[in-house]
Image 1 (spheres, rainbow, N blue to C red):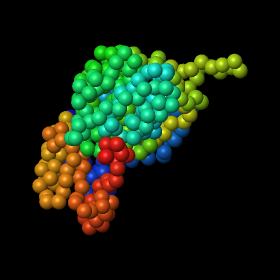
Image 2: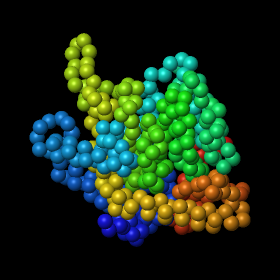
Image 3: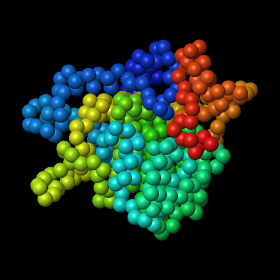
Image 4: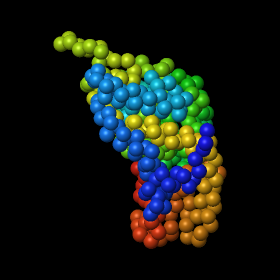
Length: 362
């Protein structure tokens, strides 16, 4: 395999010609090969999938399945364990809404989470679920010992983000997963900030569920994401939405659901987007995920060392345990003003604000 160079990647992303883009934790620019794959769909076989027997439908259906297989292979899963979603948030909500929680069950979640992996669990309190919030340390690290103290025989699910979107801290997802399973709890990992930046092996992590975006580290299109659901626990989930494509049979008396994952994919999917996601996985594999991870670690270390050495700048997160993200404040300056100045004077794009993680930022 001939791996791509950094300059090759830059050439493939036209947006980088005029911008220093540093907001990949929110979304990433789309490489030309991904755009071309989507354009090919629109120009050559723009049809629905699984609905019809003519050649355009068959080609679109085959391409969508190929994309599902590429996504599955990228995280060491099987294609029948992948549900396509519009983003990470939807993937997490499928689990939060689809599990049969009962009054008296408990859920354990750290306070460092993105709102998408925090609010769905907080809302379960309305159903009598005991939601136990575990505090991260000052550096944003979740101590597995605190998770162990919070779980017991009532714990139905433990969840944690792999990498904090606000602070960049990397959590010990393998150890936390072991703790969850030791008490018989299910385990969900929010991998929004790790996928595409480092190797993510859902089986090695021990995840029952894992939620992913397509539009961040994997360089895929916006409006794409996916949920990994282990074959072992698929029977635990009920679909939140029903409709076209989710059933085998329907009568006036009832219906018979499709198998996993079809029963969770109601209606027409973002076909072009997921075909683009498949192309983005091909693109990532051409670069090499281990090369990406090594380069990302080097860049993170250099950036932290440089920025933290500047008088008047305060950096957050444990410098020994952050990856890909650096959060900072400049004394006596509003973060939005800083972002605006960087953009207008140097074309540098950075995120400002609470990063959809208000408890973490507090």
